[in-house]
Each structure stands twice: as C-alpha cells, then as structure tokens.
Amino acid sequence: MSMIFHGFKLVKELESNLPEKRPESLSVSLDEIAKTFDDANERLKIALGIKNSETVLNQSKPVMIASGSDQMLMHIEPGLMQEYWSRCGGFPSAQGTEAMVQRQLMAVDGGGGRNLTVVEGSSGAGSGSSTPKKGRRKDEGEEKTVFLVAALRTGNTDLPPDDNHTWRKYGQKEILGSRFPRAYYRCTHQKLYNCPAKKQVQRLNDDPFTFRVIYRGSHTCHIYSTAPTASAAAQTVPISSAVTTTGHTVDYAPALLDMADAMFGSSGIGSNMDFIFPSNDSSQHHHQ
DNA sequence: GCTATTTGACCGAT
DNA sequence: ATCGGTCAAATAGC
Image 1 (cartoon, chains in turn red, brown, yellow):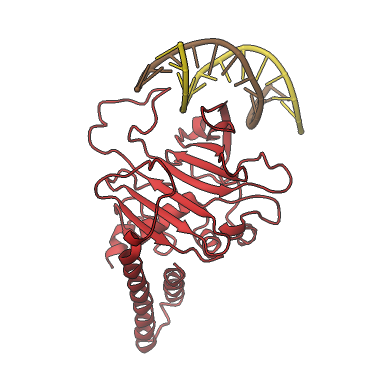
Image 2 (tube, rainbow, N blue to C red):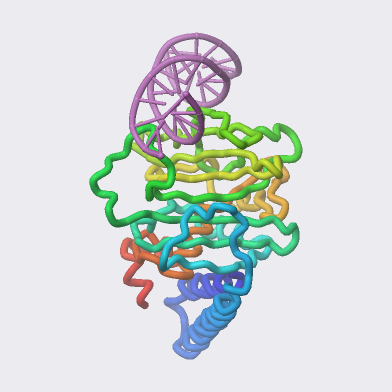
C-alpha cells in the first residue's frame, strides 16, 4: 500500500509540473512511476499467492462469501490511511457496489494485532422485484460493509467512532446473544439529500473496546462533519491505536473500499481516482 | 423553535 | 411467537 501511495504521490508531482517538464525528465518520471506500480503489483501477487495458506476469516459466520469472491491479506502501515484521507479530502462514497463482485478484505495491522474486516457485497441478480421495505431482513443482497474499529478508552467511551459523516440515531435494540445493544444510525442529510446511508454500531461481546460498525447504503450527500483539511488529517492515527489526541476515533471502511477499488478495479464504476485525475471521466484515465 | 436522542410500539420476516 | 429494523412521540439540549 505504501508503494501504491508513493506512486500516487509521484503522479501528483508529475501532474503539478507537467507543463514545464522537459522530455528527458518526463521520461525519467514516467519510468519511476511505472516501476513503483510494477513493484507494488509484484508484492500484491506474492500476497495473493499466500492468501490460501492464511486463516482469513475470524468470523464464525462469513457474511458475504460466494463464488468469485476475492480474499487477500493486507498489511496497513501506520499513517497510510491518514495519508489517504488527506489525499482524498474525505471518505469517498462506498460506490461500485452495483458490481457483481463480492469481496472480503482483511487488514491486519502489525503493531496492535487488531484485526479489521471489510466486507462488501451485493446480490446483483434477482433483486429487481423486491422493493425496499422497513423491517426487511438482513443479508438479502443489500450492500453492506462490516468494519471493526477501536472504541474510545478515555472520555465518553459510549460514543460511536467518528467517521467524518454526520449520523442521526434512530433506534437502539438489545440483540439476542449480545452483551451490548445495537445502535442504528441514518445519515443526517437523509431528508435533505435523500441520502440512503445507514450504519449500525455495536460493541463486540468479547471486546467492549471494539465496535462492529455495519454500513449500509452509500452516501449521496457528500457532506462531511469535518473539513478534510491537513489539520484534520493530522488528528488521525493508525488503526492500531485509533484514538486521536482530541479523543475521537476514526474508521476507514469506505476509504478501504475505495482503495480496494483502486487496487482491484472491481467495477470501473465508482472507482474514485479523481483525486489524481480531476476529470469527470475517470474511467478513461484508468486506461491511460 | 429547532434539532438530536431516547425508547416503547409497530411491522415484516422467519 | 420471536427477532431485528424502523417509526414516532416524548424528551433533552441549545
């Protein structure tokens, strides 16, 4: 991942001074960019080669496993997500889920040993006839992202992790077999922008300092609770100790999904590369 | 007055 | 009948 980010950085630098680039130095820059992504790809292939020898799932009930699903192990180095956050200027919406692709990623941070599970999926076929209804059963093919995130250990530890979106709580339920209640949130801008994003937050039975956060639906409002400034990004910390100096936690699920999009190119739709290619038609730039 | 949270009621799925 | 997700009235906070 760090190599990929380094590649992004090189591209950005090239983009910023492209007009005055001499052909010789342009060639050098392109070589460097190409080599960086080549190296990243090599490492990725190695990782894919060992994926089956690792125990990827720690959930007794995998939410989204189907034929064609991808699995891989990633090592997220401290600061990478922060860099991505500052680079992208906010969480991208969890789009690209129209794709038939179902994937599961698991990021294992090196320091704290905390596992992080990201699941994305959609049923695709056969969902046309059903219309969204309240009380609809889970796992009916609706897009869903599961994420584990550290809870606050100081201050109000009941606060759900801050993900830079504004949420409005609309329910809380005691869940059978769970020690802690599940809280239900919808996007604050649901009415104003018809934003369908929702999330559920629940503490783990065996680890009260970890929240399981389930995201459903993508943000269409693109409004963030905090401005994606460098100073805001500077307050984020690595996953292994996701408590900021201001006492906020940060979760990275949508960003991870988008990074995965960048890495795997799952759908070509909704892959957010606009922070590199500020164009309306990023798919064209993908090919370039 | 406005917005957010709480919480019992309600409803669809099983 | 039970469970989980949502509604909506009551309440809290500004």
